[in-house]
Amino acid sequence: KAGVTQTPRYLIKTRGQQVTLSCSPISGHRSVSWYQQTPGQGLQFLFEYFSETQRNKGNFPGRFSGRQFSNSRSEMNVSTLELGDSALYLCASRQGAEAFFGQGTRLTVV
Amino acid sequence: AQSVTQLDSQVPVFEEAPVELRCNYSSSVSVYLFWYVQYPNQGLQLLLKYLSGSTLVKGINGFEAEFNKSQTSFHLRKPSVHISDTAEYFCAVSDINDYKLSFGAGTTVTVRA
Image 1 (tube, chains in turn cyan, green):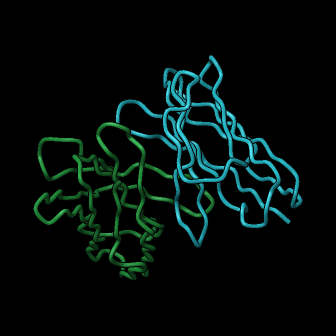
Image 2: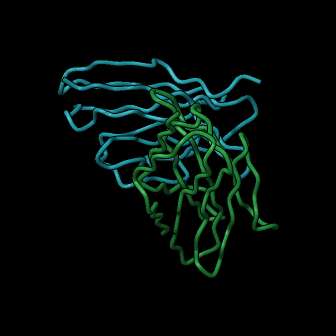
């Protein structure tokens, strides 16, 4: 069974631009969550989608948004990028209580 | 809301020696507990989980952890480490009803020959 796939692996964007990250969950998993990992703040929960509905949301500004498609693939969008948005963005798909993480997308904002 | 405290930010250890990584949590509701490992430039890999039942949980790569409800702890142990265990380790907790993971700050384990 294929694992969680995140694309792209690396991104460099300029401040003020927007970016879209993609996540394909493990086949059959309907829940997808997103986390931000930075050296200063550690791992922080962004949001969770289940069957195309946002079910849970972390404490991030409205510039961070997401969606989930009918095939459970999810995208995360960050608008008006700031230098502080540079981070590793991790996606996880869930089966029951167990979350399986992808390799992450490393976003660098310059 | 839950919170997790990993008591050691860095743990140096010699190869074939035992290691213990300490994790305490706080929560007003029942929780699930997890340990994840992260290698450089990689995602998180689940080492083990406590959902219910036996408080001693065995995971992959020879790791085990013990859930202590009275002390709200979930310490991770390995009796004999290898160079390949060099990585960052994260303790995480989730509410049994919403599954959102709250992570500790991480413990960097460096195994030396």
